[in-house]
Length: 365
Image 1 (tube, rainbow, N blue to C red):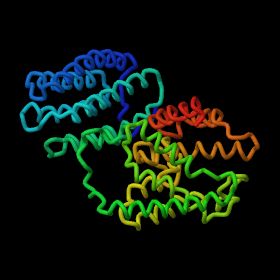
Image 2 (image 1 turned 135 degrees about the vertical axis):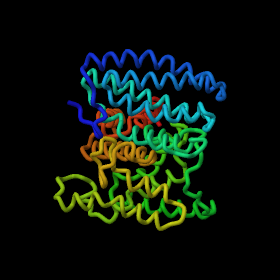
Image 3 (image 1 turned 30 degrees about the vertical axis):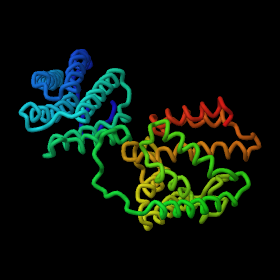
Image 4 (image 1 turned 60 degrees about the vertical axis):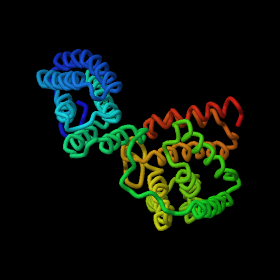
């Protein structure tokens, strides 16, 4: 049986689940038309009332089919829409996106359960928790809460999202550029440790910036550059026998290796204006499936910049491995190996990365 927290996957028979899937398919068609109308005219009271009835019907269908997840997802959305219907809450594009994302996940989960596939990658417990927070919020509009839910589920801060509560950096631009020069000097010191590392800094920076650009630059460019430059600073404090991975590590050496993100992240947190970059560095060895280090975070808990770092760092490691074996810099072999580790990385960011390296392979740059 597929495991899931909070008993969200309690369901009746497969026949009942199939009946709910059929009802959900019908309701999704109606729901998407209603939301399209509300995008055009957020004040359309009839469309709002119709959308509320659709969610109410969806929750009723889930209850009749003993499909707990459907109830848990539909109920908080219904609660929010009741406030919209009463005129106490504005219907916004981010709220529309949240409803569509949540019901899409419900549809995906239903299909997976019927096909006896895992739903772990859907992070349903986090989705339900975020929906419950949304329903309990007294904000109007709910855009901040909706943006948090969307970012938690996708890894991207949606366009039009209000700024986070954290204050913007007040560090002057010239000081931040001086910091980047300092970070680059540290990064270039690592390259002196091994001839095979020559040019590594610029390769990583190009890949990170190009991958971010493919996604529409959701990650702050300066914070990302700082994270790329400094993410392996801690490696300089380790002997080459640990960081070049030429031999099996002892438990103590592996523990030392797993601590290296903290050293660079700790340095950055003590410098004004680099908190975002510090978080990217601290998380760049976390994995989407939760098998990474140092905290074993899952994809929804990892910041987007760290997801980029994880991919490009692994890609460069594969290139280095091939070079150490005398195979030469094999772009195609490295691409194949990274994509074979699809559970390790964010699927969305792997998609953007693949577009970048595909372009590199075609142009030779």
